[in-house]
Length: 119
Image 1 (cartoon, rainbow, N blue to C red):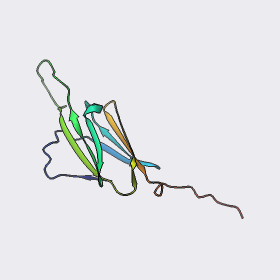
Image 2 (cartoon, rainbow, N blue to C red; image 1 turned 90 degrees about the horizontal axis):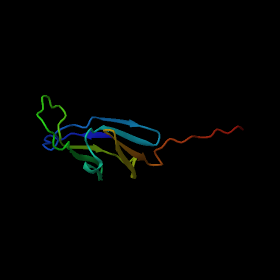
Image 3 (tube, rainbow, N blue to C red; image 1 turned 30 degrees about the horizontal axis):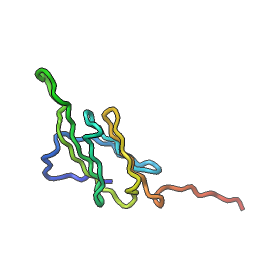
Image 4 (cartoon, rainbow, N blue to C red; image 1 turned 90 degrees about the vertical axis):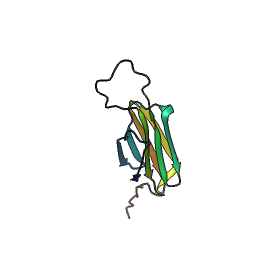
């Protein structure tokens, strides 16, 4: 899995920091998304791309900011996926500011145990 970088990406106002690891049955992406609701998160597959985009919105805040490092705005990230990923086995959840995407591996790719016979 490879992250695609765009030369000019005016839509992104914040990056979603991402960890990617390979398990025995899936590839798992864990993405930091504080302030992003389920309704504002869009995940889709188009050909060989996993596309994740959405919006972080905190609503109206009363008062004046003294420091503002957590900004609302849009984000857009793309990852190239290869033919080892089963496109029908992609799941996503969001909780506590973390989005977790699980991309199931095709059966032919998963490790399998070989039994040893005694002769």
